[in-house]
Image (cartoon, rainbow, N blue to C red; front, side, top):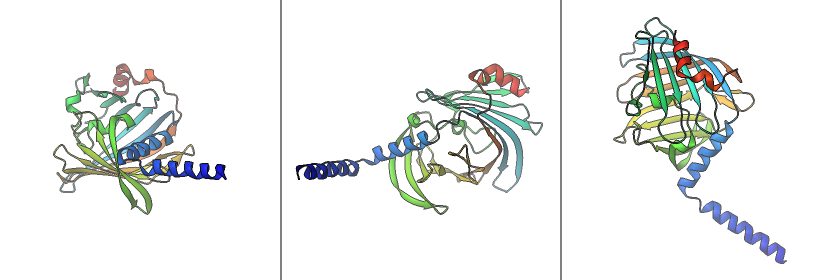
Length: 261
């Protein structure tokens, strides 16, 4: 009898603790679970088609490739290279994401054959004329935000958590982001970005998801819509490869120059 009473008491205490979880604790836990779920992809390569659309519907297309190296102790490293058309061919961007402090980013411009450092003051600027900012290129490390659970929702027929994440970096161009995270596999379904005046700036939606290596979900398409300018940028991903032979030496400023030649 005593054992039964003790068991019930423990269950009540456990239930009370779970019930007592604050919105901030619950939001952080969802973000940590999502990050943990995607750990272990190692490295990847993918080809991209970037389509820019202005407010009049006129489009221009660019072709690029991206390499990513997963790092556990710090954020990921990535290298993006534009392959065509001729006016952007050879332009390359190197990003070191950091879990704490500002990220490091460099841009190689073949027209002047120089590497330019992207200062943290300019990280909110547009990436190569697109609706993505330089800070959007960084990997989404848990430590880069504070969190708050908002609600549960349905999106594209899937159950999702909605959490708010606020950038820790005061130089971010965003005051907050609302993120829809799939409850079953923790993939991101949609992100709303709010500017420094806390007005809705952009919405990023993900579609055409495929699962790789049995657990790593990657979207086949990103659509970023700027609500304040009427412009859009679409990124389509093809030929994903994982566990490719990449090392930290492949993500140096010299490798940035070589990739851009």
